[in-house]
Length: 555
Image 1 (cartoon, rainbow, N blue to C red):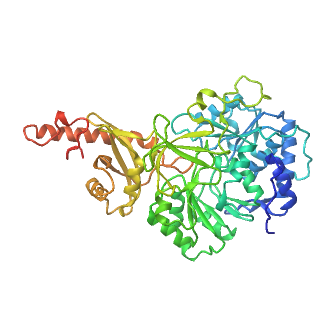
Image 2 (cartoon, helix red, strand yellow):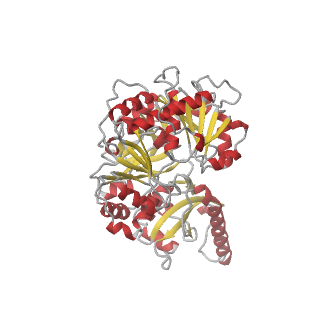
């Protein structure tokens, strides 16, 4: 059955959107879990989703969940997650999704701060949870009934919190961004090319992620069928899902697309259902964008956002491969952007500045701890965390970038990655982008390491395209010399088999930091040894060259 657009202009809360979708698209599949191995294909229609959500709401109500209470979902992406989420909404309660791949300390930190009334966890994780998790239920306990009536509960208000979405925690313990019904409605207004009525979308992301929890309104209103990538993610099963489930919108991070491109069966796969492919979270080289576009036969678009903003920028079908590879596009509908300096003033056109984004979709603030509080009171905003990040509706991101003449945003690095080499600012993303263009480089990450003379130096972690033809540091420096200032070129090279990734598929630079410090130390020792060996010559590092010197020995 072909889905129709669901009229929602008169609706103010996400539970009402599902109720109407169940009337308009009741027989349309809302979610699909593809068959894998001996496991059967599972699906749920919008009509069944509404009824199962009612049953889940009644079950949770009997477990003590009420208005403003928090329920933590320690679940992987699944139909059960979607059912529980809508059941929680129906009670006016708040969903706090927790990625099961998070470390135990991160999970416990969230549970302690959220003080949930109930936590629903994957069956194998139940025994790991303590008293801070509230009443604990296994995923297998979620009702499968489709005929239970919705329990009586106060009607939801547009300003009610719907979800707390947690940051990745790459620079400390995760922070929880609060989103309400108005946020979700604003997201739906800005999703453009990635959502059309009747789409069948392949989702590779955890449902605890902002790309699921804040996009429910959009997906329900467009009658989108979400096909859930089996976990653990594998390229072969993703491709099979695209073919057998007649996917129209396929999304993945660059590492996932790279693995799909390596599949021999891609050459003969029936991809005629596809209309667009989306990517984000990391860069793709122009050659990779071209290869993906040609292999899939559809436009490739990139999206940029953050947990706190939910909506951001994106390229458009028809943009050339260089734009898709080197920028994250222009603001999507409803989003404003500006780049500012350290004092908060807007930078000159073409200059690097910190990225700010504003729209109705941004978070309401970071959640304050609820430990020791009353469960039936609304979640409060932690001012000390939120100040400096959210100001007059603007989210001040941790990213730096520049805008081109038509408004495309190029990211050059994050504030926690920016380093100073000899007094000069170096943005790792800018260096990585230049190195990506080298034909010998399959993937690369640049991480700073301490240096006694220059303060910090750049260490390039490179995965070679051909392990038998590894480029040298000098080769790479020369290859990018016409694109970057010499002080931006990497100072040391570490060749590795693969870059470590976070659960979200981003390069885990924190995991590379110890190796970067080791490489920087070895470089410094090597230079010092050469300096001593040539102490009576005119070649070397002189005191008058520090910290801005950039001699051959520095390289």
